[in-house]
Image (cartoon, rainbow, N blue to C red; front, side, top):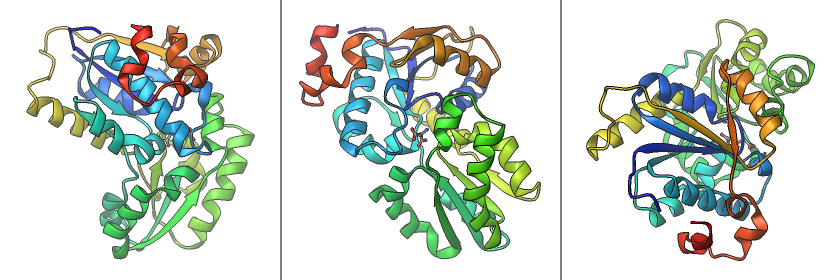
Length: 287
Ligand code: DGL
């Protein structure tokens, strides 16, 4: 285990969390970042909650091993499934992401808000709680979007496949008069140009990444963990999938070359992890 905790760890089912990482890099340029794309198990949107919890523990354990001083769960689906358990188990700031219903309700003029998210997010207890808290002040239309994150995972952010899916998912929201859209999955910000084209320029689209970056800064600051502002931080990228394939998509999405490393085998495979009990000690043979 590294005694020197000096980086911020991120993870997502795949490439979606890069929408959060790029925002954090803009807002906190002196921080060093380490991103894990769990592309070997993407998408999370249709996986069992147990598997998502297992993957979240394995990856967080890896991030700590690499020297994470804080972890951003850059995935709405993993936040809904696992963040309470992660926070109970790991003793560092763990920042999650959830659909921005509260700001959307404050912003809508038509009184109708659409939420695009994965099936697992909209079925979660955490999401039901969010709706209970803020949903009574506007009409909220919840739209699960199977297949949409997979398009982004393949680098398809324009073209016929994401267009057909988005037309289908946006249609009921547009017919009901929604004027505000919440992007409840970190893959979707990469589709904003297409969404805006299909939904019209008047549609307000809420990407929660800036709020996550603000919350991260606040948590680091209050814990005295903010990096000193001298040198721009470095960024490393890992994947549990095929590095060649994923590096190409990441390079396309970030608009800059990404060098991708393979997640060590014992953090990569479900089989290796299944023999364990969700705890850091189970990975001692990896250290
Ligand atoms: N990017 C993820 C989210 O924010 C998960 C998408 C998926 O793997 O289904 O929910």
